Image 1: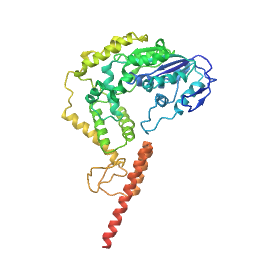
Image 2: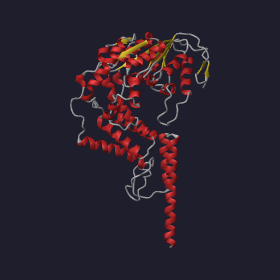
Image 3: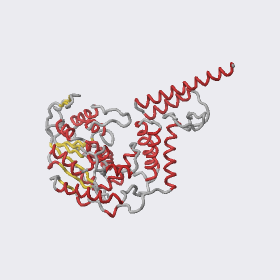
Length: 445
């Protein structure tokens, strides 16, 4: 989560990216104070972004623009940090960042706010790029801080939703491993909060850094601090109680993880797996299932010492960082009493339900002919046509084509997945042709 806020008037020189991708004039840019809230993930991003998005009109009347049309300007931040679009596998185009800057230039409001947690992934060079490409501005960098034992379960659940196949314990072993690995490097780059503060402070100065301690018992605290920072009236961002950000229960997360394993085993493209879960499963559950408010995925007790030691070190460094701290830093030191002292093993019923969900999700991909079938259920099995279920009856190539066209139209799949669909369709048509030839040969003989 990040928020970029711009205030007062000045003239910007012509803009050109360090890579020379585009050139945007800034002669009319009416911005001078820029507040960037960089997250990191799992520290209240959804709450803040949803509040900003749904209170756009009220904020405009206060002279504050929330840039973009969605809940966050993720594409622009992903271009800055050179991330790929998970739904297509392709690099995010530079036009996303260009469009964001253009909106800032044309804004008539005295304050512009932009939000995306992807800014927390920025390297030192990318942070310098952000500062260089918005010259002449007075910056305020805002970072949300949350207790490590709260972040870990949330981050793992998000990883699973995005396609991860490792269990919580397997991931924790990677995170706390003394040897360097991509998983620990990626996590600690964003969640060693003291180092995050230091990286941005080295570019913008420690006085420009404001760190907000997120209180799980009072989630509205983040909204109130943000209102103050962007110059909004108290209460303008509403309450976190109005934000629907339900945490998936353990059975559902495990079911999705097992689906990821099945899909990976059968060669389902990552983009299609991501679409299936993030555009289908999770939104449907959030809209159709009432949350019981129970917390899941607590860190096992064997990781208590490592969590306490790491959080203590983070807080110590933050105290001496020179950054402006809002809230009580002591709340970030992990409390041993919060650790789960009970065994984490799932019951047989939970295992059964997770398996049902995993196979149900994978079965839908098979029924829609969106993945190949490597294990035959029935020698005459072919994907169903209109009802979405596989059936041991024969279908025509025309039936398959109609179904694939409907699936492609609804999913907006990337090029890689479209190629797989075309290959599968060709295989179905070719197999149908061979069966007809064999039938005619048998009749003639």
